Length: 222
Image (tube, rainbow, N blue to C red; front, top):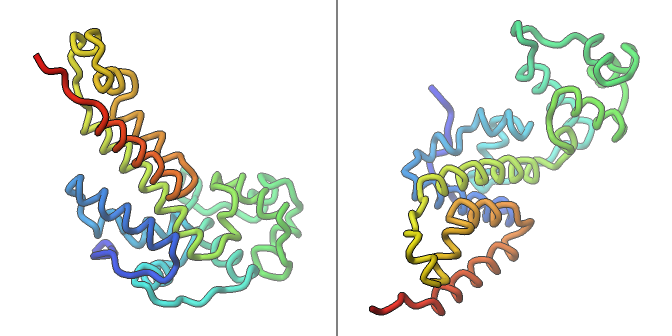
């Protein structure tokens, strides 16, 4: 059975809570099942956070925070289990060493926990496995927030694709400003650009601006 998160609840971490709320609301608008959108295994693989910790954080309970060494080892082990070769086998220490530009002895010491990683080590290993910067080092709540924000961006793209609005060319050519806005940018373009903004404050500004624009634009009366 697929692990999943049944419903959003109060979360102590404010950015994580805000992201969960947005994702849940968007999923509801699209008719998506929350246990699929908040699938624990998928979120764990995307964030590097252990499945039980993902569940605890989503439930709003304190999960503790491992130190940098422990986080690095947890997430490197997850990468080795989930980012495998085309034949389904794990990358060997030698292959990781070659791909990350370090000696086999260095790679082995890092994998076995005998050596503390530097940022250069982390960057090199992240590039080898094709994951984003900070995957091996971010705090658990931050890592989960980042993974959910990527889910949000994908949902926004899907939602915008569903919500395409067809604007008659005659309306745009007649000088209707709302028609021109939709013709030039469309729901897809507006949603995608909003998703790229760095914070809720910026997104709120976009919402405020659009509300003001829609209030000011009145349909042409015949």
